[in-house]
Structures are given as C-alpha cells and as structure tokens.
Amino acid sequence: MSGTKFVVVKLKELIKTVVFAVLGVIILVGLIWFFLSLGDRDSGTYRDGVYHTQVALGDESAMVSVTIKDGMIEDVALSEMSETAMVFYPLMQSAAEEVCKEVVKNQSLTIQVSEQNAYSAQAILEAVAQGLEEAEK
Image (tube, rainbow, N blue to C red):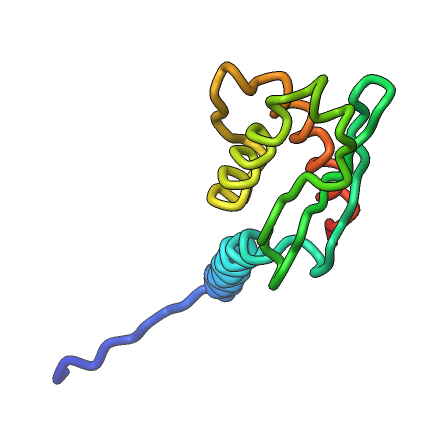
C-alpha cells in the first residue's frame, strides 16, 4: 500500500462549517458597512442655505443667521439688532462674534465661551441650535 489515504467527511460537519463561514462573512461585511457609514455622517450633515432665527432680548429682538455651505457651518452672525437692544445688551455683539468663531471652528454647539459672555452666548447658541434644526437633513 503506497500511502493511499481515505478522507471521510461527514455531511453535517461540512454543512455546519459552510453555514458558519457564510455567517462570518455577512457579519464582517455588515461591520465594514456600518463603520464606513459613520464616517459619512460627520461630513456635511446640514442642507446648504441661510437659516434665520429670532433672539428675544426683553422687548426687543435680534436675528441670528446661520450659513451652511457644503453641509458644514460656514458662518453665524447676529443682525437686525436695534440701537435700543445694543444699549441694553452691550455684550451681545462681542458674544456673537465669539460664538461665531467657536461654532465654525468646532462645527458643533459644544463650545467654550468666556464667563463675561456666558448668558449672551447661551441665548445666541439656542438660536443657532434652532437654525441648525431647520438645516438638518
């Protein structure tokens, strides 16, 4: 006998191995698809355009504009603020500039603002949040 070998393969074991191999491939493809789709969410989650929101300042109001370009926050600006509101809320303009810079830089509403502008910045951030809700896809 010159080394002839017989291989006995049980049908149940073969089917079990194929099923587990197919399940492994499906799980692997699913994980790859899931993690690739997570990366797409971060790049451009908003519709392009300019979104306006009112900020109540006592009896007065001001307009906060959020500009979205290529799905990213491009600009946040405070406009249409009356002279009366400027007198009663002198820190509002500086807070708006600080919020604009930080929101655009971080592409998020989670930002750090100075303590002197905390309340004004909070009012502006709430308006920006409303604008971003309108812009969400």
